[in-house]
Structure formats: structure tokens, C-alpha cells
Image (cartoon, rainbow, N blue to C red; front, side, top):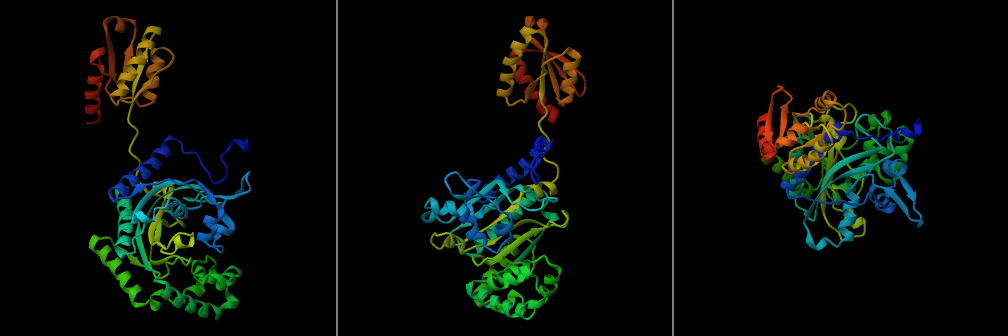
Length: 419
């Protein structure tokens, strides 16, 4: 039945998928913490203007992809399509300007109504960091270095290429914008309808066009680096020097841009050729004008976001789930005692499950099915003697262990089994 299937562009995270998902987010969380980033969580929906204002009214996200609805109070709300705007809104709402610089890590679901494809869903999940309140190039290096470390800890950094560019400061962007408008005006008749519209409102967005005819025109468009002033050149040089000092390799990509005016200076992406068309796995940059645009005092910021699903697809298999113990109780008295034993073993950090029903053969079959490393067999005879039978399932060996020694003995045996 159609109504019992997940909505198109969404999927269920079953245990194997969830382990891979958690492996990415937990690894990133730990690595980000080592870099001084504290975790933050914002609501999954905001007032629509938070995103419409920051993502730009010409962007595909705003015009085509946002999940926007009117709530019962008449407010227009939007499920978050990204989280930088939400984090910056939280920065303003909670009066955090006096505490800068602040460093935040986040992990959670985002929502975009776009065509589902490999590595792209309508409900997807992102990790990200935001470093707010530091205007120095060192902050850009710190953000990139944290992302690089996460990819390294996931074992996938060698599958990616760091692409780097500078967007310059406001003066440089204005000069480049003027040059772009002049260039594209000379090719106006060949531009797509969408790019013609962008030419008057946001010409840098034309550089992102997917239209084949637009891309041919873009190939010969002016390059940003030719319009950088001295301050912008020096800022970018400092970023590259910092990355060089850390041994982080990068490729300069003069076509890597951000179309919105609050972006400046560093823009970067970690890309891969291992996921087909969806090459970007982590993307970010400096956004010194964003918090001011949202209504806060002008505050610099830099950060990035990465798709958990894409990172999980690139990553090696997540660490396997810990193999359990299975208690096999035979009889009412044994079942009651099994509950007490399970509580004790779990208190000793031993994963413990039950074989709930059936004869001995069926219960042992269940133990093998869940890949248990040992079975604890209890019956009336064992209870009368104050012991349990412990059977290790890989080699079939079985021994009698006193109830009072069970937790300690199994803890030692588990260490040896992992050995």
C-alpha cells in the first residue's frame, strides 16, 4: 500500500544504516570537540524569513525547494533546508555577541523538496560547524582543518580533494560584479531565462548555472582573482600559508563561488569522484555579512556543512555492533532468575539479551541468529546448585560458573573473545 511506504525522498534508518549514520556523527562530534567546538541544537523549523532573507530570493532553495507552511497561528514557518541561518539566529536571539568568539558543532535533519538521487534525499542529515566572531584568516584555517580532521578520522580524506577560492572583500566583490554584468550583457541573447533573471539581481549565481549553453558562456567569464584588492590578496595568502603549515593539500578553483553578498573571502569544498554527480561532501566559507543581514550587529563568521548520508557512503563499514550474551532460561523459576542476572550483567557493561521462548534447540538457534558470543543456560538443576552453564558459541565449549562469579568471569571471557 502506497500510504505504508516512506514519503518519496525519505528513508528509514534501520539498524545497519543507523550504525553507519551514528559512526559519522559520533566521529565528527568527537573530532570537533577536540577542536574546541561545543554542540548546539536549533529547532527543525524557523520563521520562513530566516531562510528567505539569508538564502536569497533568487536561489533554487527558496524558490523551489523549501518546505513552507502556515501554522495554526497564521505564522509562515519553514523546515530548515540548512542550519547556518538557524545557528546565527540562535546567536542573535540568545544575546551571545558578548561571548565571541564562539564555536559550535551541530548534527541533525534538514529538508529540501528536490529530485531524490544517490546521496541526495528530501529529508537528509548534516553535520556542520560555525565559528562566529573571529575575522582573522586563522579562523578560516581552523574551520578547514577541523573538517579535514573529521574526514581523516572517518578514513575518507584520501578520497576527497579540497577545492579553494577567495571571494574577496566587499570592494573586490563590487568590482567583480560589475565586470560580470558587463560580460554577460554581451552574451544576453544566449543566456537561459533563469540566468537573464539573475543577471539583474545576482549575477554571480549565473556561474552556478547547470544549463549547458550557460556553462559555455561561463567558461570565458572574468575570473575573480583579477579583481581582488590588496587586503583580499593578503587574506587569502594567509589562509593558504596556514593550510600549507598543516600539510593540508588543496587545489585552487577560481570558479568556486557563493552567490550571496554576505559571503566573502574564503570559499571551499571537499569534493569526491566516488559518488557520481554529487561531488561535494563538505562545503563552506566565510559569511561576515550574514548576522548583520539577520538583524544582529555585524559579526564575522566562517563554517561548513557536510551530508551525513554522503559521508557514510564514502566511509568504511561502521564498527560492528557488540556481540551479545544470550540468557537461555528453561522454566518459570529460571526466567525469574534470568531477569536478575541480566540486570547484573548489563550493570557490568555486558550486552545481554534473552532467548524468550521455545525448547532448548530453538533458544540456542536464536542465540546463533543474533551472533551471540556465549549463552548462559539456566534450569532447575543449575538454580539448585547456585550456578549457570556458560557455553561459548564459536567453539562450543561449556563450563559451570557460580552465580556469584558470573559477571566477573564473563567480563574476563569477553575481553579474551575480543582479543
